[in-house]
Image 1 (cartoon, rainbow over the protein chains, first blue to last red):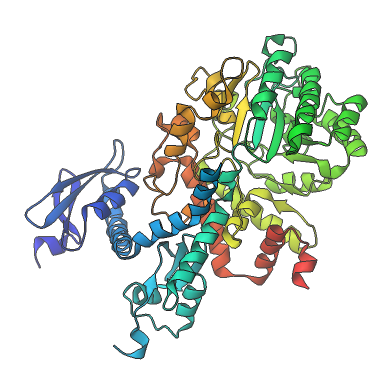
Image 2 (spheres, one colour; image 1 turned 90 degrees about the horizontal axis):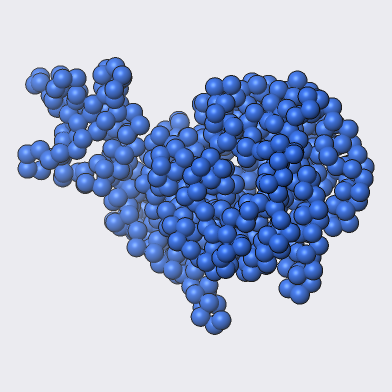
Length: 116
Length: 486
């Protein structure tokens, strides 16, 4: 069992801050950013590139918070970033339909204003 | 590829994980469905059996189609247009502050009222006429003029003049014209009530619960019990104009937050047909006295849930009584119809659905923006009726900025939220909390409150208890529970 496996999802620990390493093969920038945004009320987050093909997400406790809280957030974050990636995948496949539907929905209003 | 793996077209939707390994999916038309996490995985991977009940349910609600794409897109577009119909009623609600004076000095007053002697906060006749002229430039086919204060009756002459002038202008344009007087009722007399009845003015008053709770914060400047006077005048009002033209608003404070069942009973005893469980916002005196009257969003949500359960039980015992905010949200969730509600719209209703005219002619997009100005920050002023034209006020940079920054479809944190179709944005509240009208969803109390309430309602819908559903449908359809259960 290597160091990584011993710490669960945590890749590195530095001064109580935890690093999560995500593969770019599965997670895109937007998914990581959207997931990180949702956690900005619970901790401080820094996103940085790691070696080729990976992105790192640092989690730091907010001032006055026990750093132990960070470890509890990781499970939620991992699921959140996965959900965000699923949303992106769906958006890529079917998102253009959203524009078609909105355009179609409000087309008659455009016609009315032209007629005035 | 076998028969069960025919390709299908998925329409855009948002989703969220729910208890019991289920997911909630909501599409662009606001239709929702609960499916198991196993079905969800098959669905998005394109391998859901098209003969399964789940697929047929998804198809009937326009989450997917395996047949006629054009028809499905047409239906989705029509439903979306219906939901957003409120956008066509550009500025229907016009709130007019005829005076800042009040005979009460409530310690939670958002408007920071002044004493009855201080007449420099009264609207003049000249300003009042200009306000009405601007109101009638609104393209909305419905015009609702709501008199606010202070206590509007302290400047009764201007209320009367506005009603009469608006009616005279309306003879030409024939819009749906409605009036609402927001009053503590304590100053009404027979001549005022006769006028209100003649001109079909609705009354919106305030009641915070039984005597002890009502008098805790609604403080009469002369030291008398506001509650006793309120009861007398409520009876007089009902005798004159009838019960159904008078509704009441509740303000939840630290005093009554844990006693809302008593408050509901009081509303029932006094003949009101419902209640609006409204959390107090940190404006005006409420902000400076927050320690004494405020509470956390978590406390509000707990009490909201308990009180909704209590009200549902009352309905099941035969007492027809509605919680109006829940009814509004259920209407959004369970019906395809448009439900404009200024405080919960996308784009925000501030300015485009409603506007408020201060006593000095300044125009603000919402009452909260006016309160902010009273506290010294005039950021949201849209203009002044004494100086500016309708076009300057309602097509100015402030309105554009509010609309651009209050579409939940594009706001960070809202854009992928599963409740997006039922929720809205409050740019002024965002500004109060973060000094930025876009706001920060993860720390927003507005977001936490609405996520909590809508999430709670969806949990009820997921559990699908027959009795609870019957009560909900009676609220949405405005029919009695007896009729629903026939």
